[in-house]
Amino acid sequence: MSTLRKILKTRTNILMGGAIVGLMSLTAVFAAWLAPYDPVDDANLMYALEAPSRQFLFGTDS
Image (cartoon, rainbow, N blue to C red; front, side):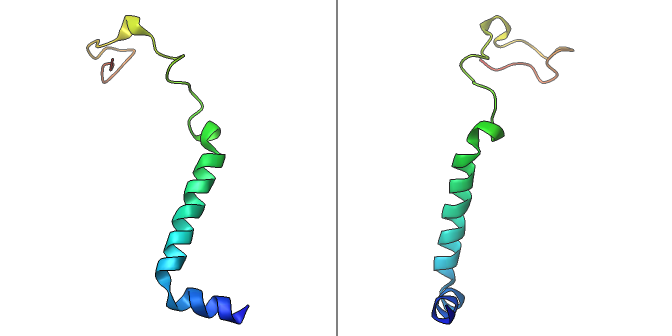
């Protein structure tokens, strides 16, 4: 195990690459929890491109 630690300590690019791959894997596993709304089902075209109002403070997108 000490050889693996030595390699990871001296080669930071391997460590950073592993961290990025690990973070992306966690994001893929928990994607449904991070973004629980379906953008297709929740699209309400009646409110597309409206100006800011009390219901939508910054307006709406298409």
